[in-house]
View 1: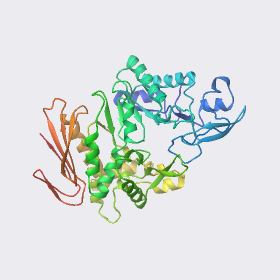
View 2: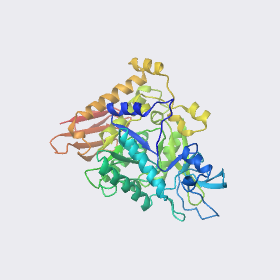
View 3: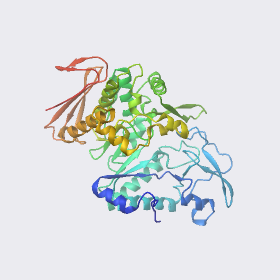
View 4: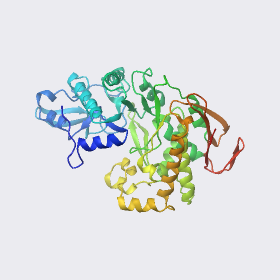
Length: 442
């Protein structure tokens, strides 16, 4: 089934041009489609091929076990040419879930996957893939059938395009998140490391890296053919659920309080018993690290750069959100005007203004960009930071997150020291200033 691009945005030729210059990652949104999409409009018109492309729920089945990251109703009533129907909408009425049990739907999604590959995708991000398969009477998350679909996608790609990598985006508890590696050969090659953002935030908020260090010692991979995709910020927010069981309830609640106090919002999810729990902190990461009682922007920048140095030192593949790379602040006014909490970290920029700020070496944006680029350059040119290399957590001082990295052949190493506290700390002959990062390459 042919797929097109909005002509006002460009064409597939433009995508191809990007793919020739960069390793391109595309968003594979297979769990749902827009309520304005051609597929769903044809469903609303009751066209025969599309009558069973979405999940219509009849009568009053027990849906109390369904896990979802929203407090909106799970089912949305739509008027169709065949009468009113209640349709499954995990993420809200504007995003309608596909009926992947229908073989025609599954084949259509595979066509989309292969189209992305044909047009130059190097990585395919499987958006919200944990919710793909629905079985009434179950949680409808992490079901075996969902893993089987991912295994099918991997098997297809292994035959026609074995260099393409799947990345699963599953903002869930860490133990469930890592299940999408499969056996290390049959599911995703990369998994978003969702526990990392809240743990790094907790470390710099409290000045104590113990929780982060303990968790980092537990990280393991089912094979050398997979890796974590490490990140701190995104267009969404900082997931709270991934840190459950790693941080205490009181520590998680403190992050919620900090986010609200520093200009952010909190998104909630619906629990089985009808109550709601924090799901995501919708806040710009620089804002989350900026204590309003400390007016020094330089200290805020130091915290922010140290947070990213921790992420960059971790074994795996690093990713930096564009607004983090250029030192953006949150757009609370935009979020409030739109009614969308996630809009806070999606500020629209004026190119001329951005260029002017980046040209000013004293500006926040320029400082952040230059310091992050320096870290990226050092990481890229140091064999010890290769994704397939090893890592040992060093227990030196609770205020310091210390990591020893090894090249795959163990011939080169780097000791990475990150002071997460406002104190000067002395470790292994090094004196670290507050929020200082020091990478010792040897």
